[in-house]
Amino acid sequence: MKIIVLKFGGTSIGSIQRIKKVSKIIKSYSKKYRVIVLSSAMSGTTNKLINMSQKISKNFPDSEYDTLVSAGEQISCSLLAGQLLSNGIKSRSWMGWQIPILTEGSHKYSRIININKTKILRFLKSGGIPIIAGFQGINKDSNITTIGRGGSDSSAIMVAKFLKAERCVIYTDVEGVYTTDPKKLNSAKKIKKISYEEMLEMASLGSKVMQPHSIQDARLNRINIEVKSSFVRKNGTLITKRTNIINNKIITGISSTDNDAKVTLLGVKDRPGIAASIFKPLSKNSINVDMVVQNISSNGKETDLTFTIKSFDLNKTMKIIKRNKNINFKKMIFDKNVSKVSIIGVGMITTPGVTFRMFQALAKNNINIQVISTSEIKISVLINSTKVTKAIKSLHKEFNLEK
Ligand code: ASP
Ligand code: MG
Image 1: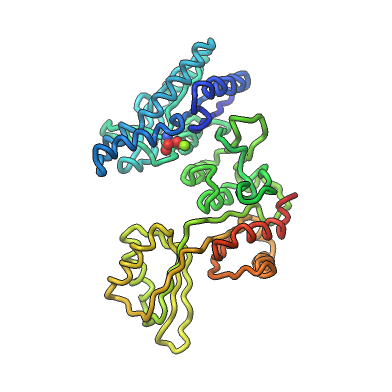
Image 2: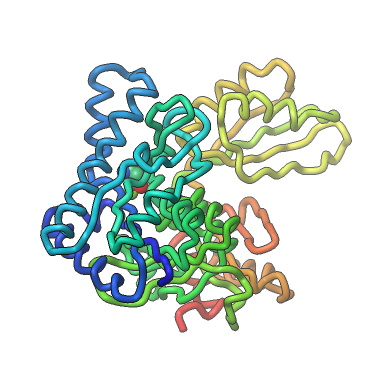
């Protein structure tokens, strides 16, 4: 029998009633597959634990943080295994250290580098359903580690990789991945199949269905992922490699961000290395610069430079720039009311004219484009935040995503 990994997110197991419901879903797979379950903590638990640590100290030690927050998954996994056992199904909970799930890197942000399959395989062969704690592992010094918020998606993908599962099903509170945020546009459609590359763009650009790291892990290891709801019985979205997808659409989805800020430096003294001088101190302070445009200077001496950052980094960014003695400019202006809207699709690689169609659709709706950036499968524009819904609506229509 093939192995399948089922991962349940916090809301899917958010109450005892939900845990009972989920145990039925698990059972329904057990006739066809050897099932491995990965669980996150019950919704709200991880936050509660973090809050407690913050009351002790704002600088609560990272190593104890990991031991503390990993407790959330211990609760949910034992409840789930207990539920299965009382239904007469052989099951057992496994914490990361018991397997072990070996991680590397610093506390709070470790990475899974190996998963020992011996015990899990033996348990599967004996007919048991292992319930494995997501989000946690152990390092070579035997310390408990965690792998970053939302990390149980990654745990599931890595378990699927090391145990050679046929697929990994991510059970969550949404029905799948949509062409755009259904809260912003009610004609948004569920996508049947999407490639890893497209999903990565959608995830990192703001569609909060799965943690972006986990999609990268799945892409590198070619793990098929199905995202579906544990609340309704409907097909979800399959995230897979490009060659598994036949799609007649040029664009697969549209995403938008809502906390960007734009900074413009006017009259920057132009010389080789100027861009590096501006951005080096920003990167040193972990400020993520996203879109950048630099004009060619008309007189060869001065130029204007615009870039975007997250709005919570705006004050820090302005301070760093003012303090920077290596650059010379006339004036700094900023705008917090900007959003990035992106169209994403592998179809654009082979289809000419996509950029034009996007710009024309926005122009027809009187939406001014402030900054543009592109990659092989994505075109992003920066626009005024008040126009986001209108932009999404017009682009959704332009690229026939409602059908
Ligand atoms: N329980 C962890 C968190 O809340 C991991 C997860 O949910 O994936 O971040
Ligand atoms: Mg979660």
